[in-house]
Image 1 (cartoon, chains in turn purple, yellow):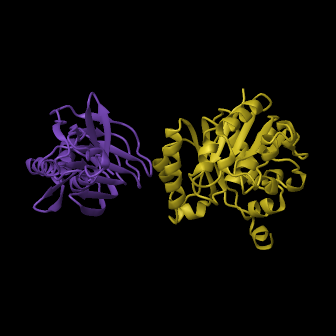
Image 2 (cartoon, one colour):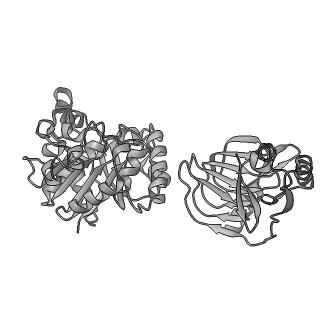
Image 3 (cartoon, chains in turn orange, brown):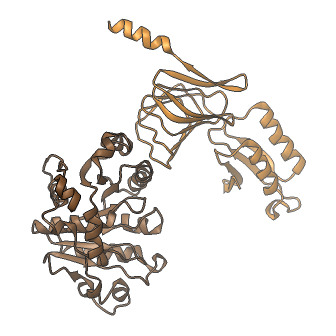
Length: 196
Length: 258
């Protein structure tokens, strides 16, 4: 079950786990609303949906409202709305094998991402150090930048890019149903000219 | 002031127990009072490797069930008067062990010893968590192979999460020739992965296996090069800056005829 239910201030707050797919969330909600708590006649608790840093598209919101309408078990009492922030946060820690990190804002990552570690990105991330682990973009708009990928795994929109190795400034993004790896070779040569 | 150090690795077979024993000997050789704790409950090893198997009468289970005192289970090594072993017991499992009890026991031992070395079991399960919960300092033993380094990296992450922040890397079974020929990662690569300071290297020697099998720690054999490795590790633990031990190649005849 990817939904945690808490009663806060006379309403139910449904906290949705950030790493589950939206489809899975809807299935879980469907099952949750069939439980005995929601089957009392004449009792319609208010439900607030906490999606964390997940941003719902219009279609996704519509699917949620249709489900709630069909079930007729709770009253929709709102949901979290992401505040638009333009601050770039800085993370310095090293990620060790088996560790996971969720990045919710645009981030400058200064630490090393070791093999076996996972970074889940909801926003663009700039890696300034070695990346050997797995970077998972949680939506197809996320862009990943770095200049030292060593056998890194990149996952965007359930497509995988295995063993990415590059020492040039590289941007990785999703376009036309595929992962694009753009190496900025001009940047390297321009830089060398400048040094000379 | 007593220092409690957990010797851990993640992967099994890298040489945690032999490092614990020889480091204990090297520390005791500098007149420090040392206690070795075998935290591998259910699979006791240190008493066998120290040659003290037949001298173990009581074990931790007897202390827990009040059959004897903590002082009574400590086995003194007659070859090194300031070295003691707290043996594990085969019958006790982690489910029956209370971490608070273990912490109190270590606190009690800290009053009597200069160093307490805890030999952690392999893996990252309950045994490792128990052992690492007893100290703020750890030596992560690695071999220069990818699997060992990956596992050690996982262990470093877990130790940091548990608040064990004084971490040292010890490279065991170091084979210079393999490194030079590129057969295995180098010391620099190991440091890049773990990002913790190197406390020492111990060379890959067949004599170590023989010593462990005979219950005669290699540190006692002053003809061997290995004892110098442990001496230098002790110096670095004490805060001195000493260069790493160079591996002296044996003469041709010695290599041919032992």
